[in-house]
Length: 197
Image (cartoon, rainbow, N blue to C red; front, side):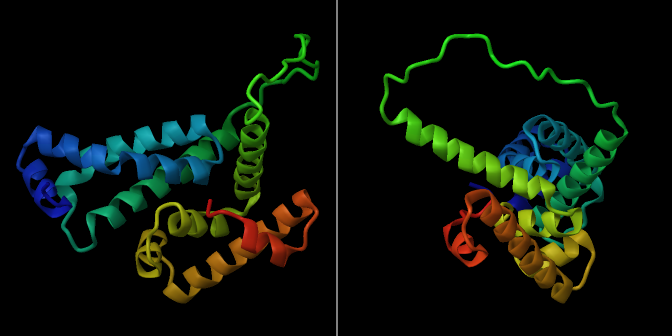
C-alpha cells in the first residue's frame, strides 16, 4: 500500500485513483474532527464535504512542508469553523415541545438498556464538547479525535506549542467539570472515567 507521500505525488500528476485512495484513507478522521468541532452530525458532514472539496482543489498547491495529514486537518478545522460561522447566521427553526404520543416501547433485548445508557453518555460528552469554547474545543478534538501531536496542532491552528498544551489542559478540565455536574461526580473522578472525545 503506497504511503501518503507517493499518493500525493501521483494525484498531483493527475492519477485519479491515487486521489480517490488518498481521500478515502483520510475521510473518516476528517469527518470525526468536523463532527466534534461543529458539535453535530449534519454540520460535521457539511464541513467534511467542504474540506474534501478544498483538499481536491488545493492539492496542487500542497508543497510537503508539513505532513499531508497535518495539512488535511488544517483544512478540516477551517471548514468546521466556517460551518460554525454559517450556523450562527442561520435563522433558528422552532421546535415542538409536545411529547411523543406513541405507545411506550418494551425492550425485548435486556442489553438494549445498557446500550442506550452508553449512547446517552456519549451524547452528553458530545454536548459538553459542543459547549466548550472554540479556542479549547479545536485543540482537544485535534488531539483526542485526530490523534495529532502538539507540534502538528500548533501548525494547524497557528499558535505556539505551549499555548496548545495549555488550551488542551484547560479544555479537558472544563469538560471534566461539565461532565461532573452532569453525572454528579467530582471533576477528578470524571477525568478518570471519561473516554476520549
